[in-house]
Every structure is written in C-alpha cells, then in structure tokens.
Length: 339
Image 1: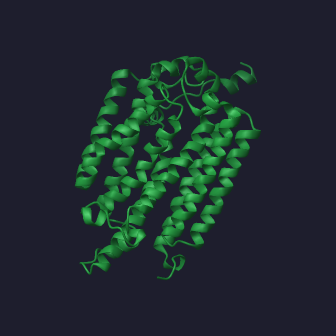
Image 2: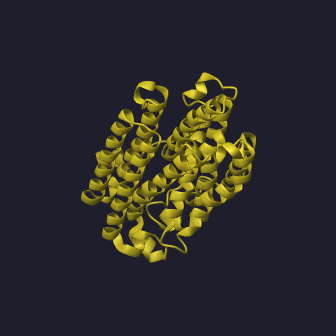
Image 3: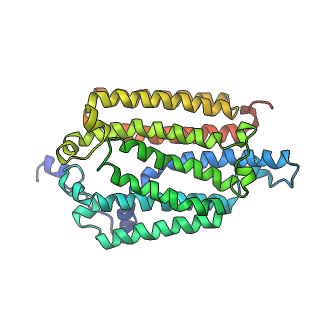
C-alpha cells in the first residue's frame, strides 16, 4: 500500500460502549451544543443575580449566597442543562430524519449515519421522540411557565428543518430556535411567579436582558449559518432548497452575514451596558469582535474547506468567551459597577 493510500485509508471506528456513544453523539452533532449552552448558562447566572436582587428589594427571605453570585442551585441548574441537551437532540434528530434524502444525494453529507445505514430510521425516530419527551418532563419540573411554553419551544426548534423548503429566511428560523436557549434559562430562574417574570423595573430585572440576548443570538446565528450554507450552494440550487445564499448568491450573502454580525456586536454591547457590566465584558466583546473579523476573512479569502474552521471553532470560542466574561462579571464584585 502506497503512502497516499495509507493516509487516505479510513480510520477504524471505536467499538463497544465508547463506539456507540461516539456514533450517537456524531449523529446529533453533540459537540455543537457548545454554541447554545454557554448563552443559556450565562442567562441563567444573570437571572439568578437579578432574582437575588428582587428578593432583597422586596425584603423577602434571602436565598443562599450562591444565588447572589449566579448559581440557582444544583437541581435547577441540572434541569436547565437537561432541557438544553434534550431539546437540541430532538431537533437535530428530526433534522437528520426529514433531510435524509437530500443528505444521501449530497456528496458532502452522503456519509452521515442515516444515508450510510449506520443508524436505522426507527432508532432515529425513537431518539427524537424520547428526547422531546425528556425535554417536556424536565421543563415541567422547573415551573409552570416552562411547562406551558415547552411545546411552543419544541415546535420552533424542530420546524426549522422544514423551512428550507418554502422560505429563503431559513437562517432566521434557526436563529430564533437558538435564541430560545437564553430566554428559556431566564424563565426557568425567574418564572416561578408571573409578578417576578414581568417585573418592569429596573431594566436588569425585567424581560429586557433575555430578549436582548435572544435577538443578539439570532443575528449571530444568521451570520455564521449563511457562511456555513455556502458549502452547499450548488447542490441546494439544483435541488430547489432555499436559503439566502441560493437567493442572493454567495457574494451578496457574505455581505448580509457581515452586516448581521455587526448588528450582533452592537446588541451585545447594549446588553452589557443594560446589566452594568464593564471591564471583563468589554475585553470579551473585543475578543468576539476579533473572532468574527477572522471568520469573515476566512469566508472571503480561503477555500470552502476552511468553512468548518470558521463555523465550528471560532463560533465555539465566541460562545465560550461570552459565558466566561459574564460569569466573571457576576462572580467577582471587582468587575461590577458600584451601585
């Protein structure tokens, strides 16, 4: 066997429990949970701090000091994480199921688990339904607001997979689906009573921060999903699958992605100002600015094979940096504005 054949030879896949775990994790792209989870956890920490301030202002019995520093307790934190994982698993499994015919025809995706026969359609549906049920059960254990809004959230995150068949704005739908994570985490912490959830003033204790962060996530997602969709421009155009890339062409779409990320940066800055964050948040904002600039340089100057770098690694860094700086602002009083 030549050196080239040795390099291109398929690597043996792990067997046993580890191999099974990696197979199912790859099926739903579990690693991409890094995109939404940090935003949800950051929103949870902000909501917990504002929840503490609400109780303090109302002269109610104060919760544990941990709540003051952004941790609502092990039980609630675990339920939020379970909801995040189950909802995303349900949505991703549904996406793989409804797109399996297109995946089989697309050379880039033909080796995915359903087209390749590594996972049966029955198993995929079983995972989709069970994870959706797990999300609803976990939401019910949080509070009534989460239980009532749970089916609505599940509809939005799953229906995205159908949008490429009838609208060019499929990226907006995906952005809304991802934006439900920080909004849902806020409701999980502060939705125990309607009075607290709809607290109008001060702004930090109102629904403004999670909604602002949710809209920020929408524009962030629109920008990087446009870049990701460029990989399938020719295939989608031939098959009649719709997106801004097929409607406007790659060049105009990249301009739209750039403008979307500029709006995202502005909204993110307003979010930090609203919550009176300063030093750490500003440093994080500058790092995010650099990552977005680098992402667009890659999309314009490098070949399509670099898009996965722009899509996954840089955006995973963006979400992780956001969580880190928000947590820093909340946990360490030095970084917070003196009230």
